[in-house]
Image (cartoon, rainbow, N blue to C red; front, side):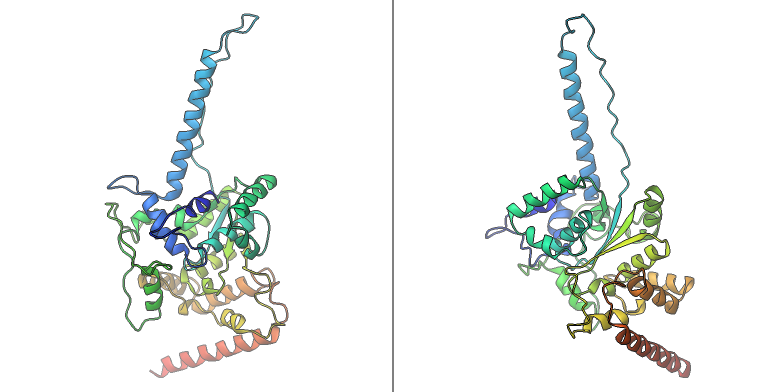
Length: 368
């Protein structure tokens, strides 16, 4: 919330830079997180590591000042000596209590609002997003967090916790084929959502690690296992964007299924609770979710999708993974199980249609 409030003060060429209705998480990573986490001409770190380092320095400085004041105090009237100067220990590891699964094309204000909604135990983040559009609303939000004593909750968000200087900082993206489904997204991610200007690239000398043991971007399974084993109240926060595009991103659906497999508590945050309503007559979103398959999901890098699909094929297979994904979304304990009451017939029809399509595809491959 502090980062967000500071972001609102950034200045562009004509007035404030940040436009809540336009700027996405991708924009903020490019214009704020990457530049803000470059610590020298050669080196960059994860933004969260930078914050933790600054916190440690501030705590140590506070302790030094307290020690100095204590040394300057005279003995009390009884002649007792001053209390000994104590050692101050700064905790090195602070495990996150939440892991946030989100879509980088989602509005940044919506991702922030969803995290706050989770902290405040609210299922929709639309009302909080409205609060965040004014200084008074932001101040009220700080006060609410303090009253509920949740301002210290720790959230793992990849944009902040992964070192972007060891991945994407030096290039906007690898340009996909012009006729590929990822091309439109590539064009959108390459430019500022408000100004339309193409993003510049960071010139640090951090090595770019796209795979292997030291790569930070493909370790979500290990991360979930580590965090859940160190905190009995750990949970995954699923930020469902306004267009439900989260369910079309291969990294996101892989995280959803892994958390479901590990029996990690999952909290879904919707923009509005009634976005999937059987009484509205608008079933497009519902059908989109009922027909989702990991093989049709996308990733910014085709190599990432290939790696995930190969792992799915080797472990459970596409069909079983898709079944687990549907259980994760629509099952009795699933993400949207309680929000979609009244869609049973539509769901059955959609799944039947998907099974027919799979059978036809397999038949075609057999004939070839």
